[in-house]
Length: 153
Image 1: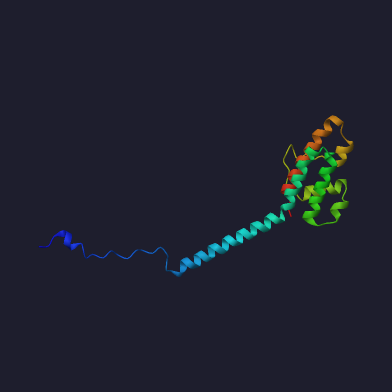
Image 2: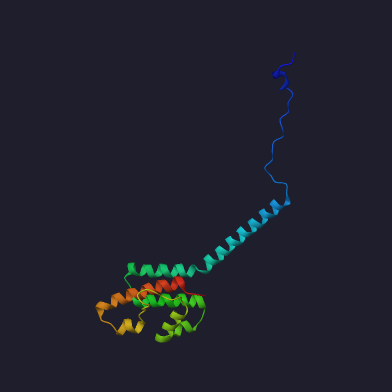
């Protein structure tokens, strides 16, 4: 006599489903995605290396507080080195007062802190009293940080 249990002895389970797609489209898509990721990584590395001078300049400005050096002259030297590194223009080294001030304004986006006031070096050296000088130097330092981060190449 046949029972239900005897009928299940000869059943074969189906073959397991493979998770590797056989269609060529998946392989092409995978190669394209890998190429795009590699290009993005290469672009990021190039961009990082190209902008390394900005990080170095910002680090130098932040170290001025710890060294106690005369900040105004040091900040100006750092901005000039940054500008020379960015533009490789020998005129940067010889610019004075108005030409330097206009160069900074020309190569950075609009500065909107306190109605775009950026003290010039001549104002900082000669045009203010000692009690206002530290405030203006702080504003100049703030602008220097902004310019280093945001100047356009």
